Length: 210
Image (cartoon, rainbow, N blue to C red; front, side, top):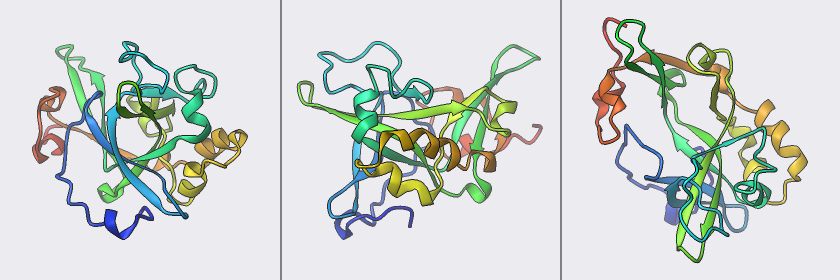
């Protein structure tokens, strides 16, 4: 098991989702009580606790370079850190043949589950729980597709990352030194994955001619 969940939160039978877009609802894990961890649901597009309306700026990713100084993220950085479970994600390249967007499915060996490092917030005025994924310069694997990628934490770093008492000066070294981004693999999939409403396991099937 990746997380230390209370018995009441274990065994969730969440339906597999193959295409999740910003602003949609996702599950994420935060520090719980008495050393446990807690599953929450929220909007993938951070709404800071102080916001009076839904942000128009892109808040689904937070750059590691500025996450601790940005007004949008610096409060959550201090004590509202989370893990966002997944088993893969997409990146795109431009086709040299027709100029279209070619999606690639990025995953760990055997499509093992993992966790993105993220931040979360609760906005009481809007009654919205939300989260964002932290990104960093791409490692050797993903750099073939894009210059940035999400931070994927080693399981041994989960406790320190979630612990609200972890000194903030330790956080960036933790993300940079305890990620498993170089273990990632990828293959090209069909352009059906480009549509936000598309779902189903066929989206992550490799193209035969790729």
